[in-house]
Image (cartoon, rainbow, N blue to C red; front, side, top):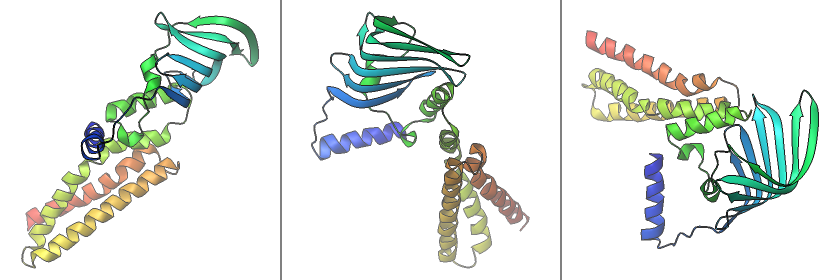
Length: 237
């Protein structure tokens, strides 16, 4: 669905609205989450693969271990080279600061293309993309509960179709003598109620009132149990 949605937006903008998508030559106020570190960039020049006013914060077990602040950072020989800045190391409650003119940092997984493209919202990612994003967030020590809710929902939400069909089948058995209109009305009402409970659980999970898995799966468990009971009763009839 996320990939199809992005393709739909591209078709709508380029073929229907005839808008020309141009790749930006620069991006301002960029924040990028790496695995175990966070980039904060004042200005990124896409074609030149150069950053201005850049800060790199590295975390170990969720604790800030090193911070690099530089006037520039350039992509040279498959690594980032920081120019004119300070590197600060934090260990056992102490800070050590050291100035530098040029400092190459190897082992960073981010490439220039990573900073050139816009980031996606959780609803625009598929399960694997969001799972990878949550792993990077956790490694950086950030709060991941609200993203875990969205991650669980990507598996829980599609089950609505199956469970509603199960409830609808049981209702059809009970109401076959009372007309299709009543069955259709009840099915629509149940579907909206189901959707409302799932979104309420999502909101409670984002606020921290419920654990992520409870917030995402509670509606499925509730209505799935009702569906099984109704189907068992329909078979006895």
